[in-house]
Amino acid sequence: MSSNASRVSNDGNEPTPFYEALAKALKKRKAKLESICPSSEPVSKRILEEYGAIFVADKKVIPPPVCVFTNEEQVTKFQDDAGWEVETIGFDEVELQPAAMKQLRKAREEAQKEGLDITPRDGSEAARRNYEDSVRLWNSRFEPALDYWLAQGRLTQQQVDRLRGLPLSQQVAEVLELEKTGIYFSKDLSKSILYSIAAPGASQHIAMLAFDVDQFENPRIREIMAKHGWFQTVLSDLPHFTFLGLKEKDLPKHGLRSLEINGQVFWIPNVPGVHPGLDK
Ligand SMILES: [Zn+2]
Image 1 (cartoon, helix red, strand yellow):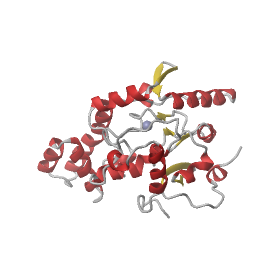
Image 2 (image 1 turned 90 degrees about the horizontal axis):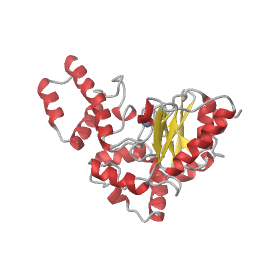
Image 3 (image 1 turned 120 degrees about the horizontal axis):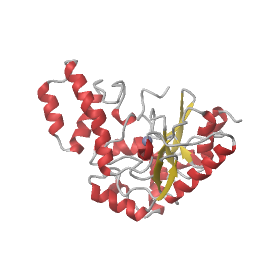
């Protein structure tokens, strides 16, 4: 079996800058960066640079019209327009864009031939989610973190009440600001909430291009997923795979660079300085 080292080899070529590859990809789709992700919104920009791999995906993939959806109606319209397929795996029904589902099925077949399997982690929530799901999941990190930092004396009751009362977009912005001072909101409170759960309205699961794999720890499973266009693109979110529909060797041309952490290969937007703590 090939190793991770050969998986990340890029023939010594530097990956294309993400924004250059993105401009090209959006032009083909007749889309404008400014309408997808307005430069006036710092949160949008951060999200694009964290989760933006789906915007440079293969043409069979339909990326969302915005980096951050702001309501359920907008999500429903996108999901209806893009369409999805349903597959029952075990007791769970999972839903994905057709191109993504096709390759997931192929990956499962390949795994099963080897006596392995690829199954959803945490039931049907492993694939398509709606806007409401993304808000609920955000709160599942946001609320306990507020309680913790209040108990630690790092936030006052007044600050906590104010944060709870903010409109979501402002809440996200302020959480990301607090994280710069070490007040983290991930599940284990040691890193950014964005590596634990997507900002509300920004999940690749809403785009129906993400699948959380129960067997993510098996390197052969990760290899099979990659062979079928499924890659890990969200740092630290270990079970989370993203459908890009591209060949792994072509990812650098599409503005993504690889980062290997504990033997797992992540493909992230090639934007210098976004992950200062992780770059050696
Ligand atoms: Zn996920």
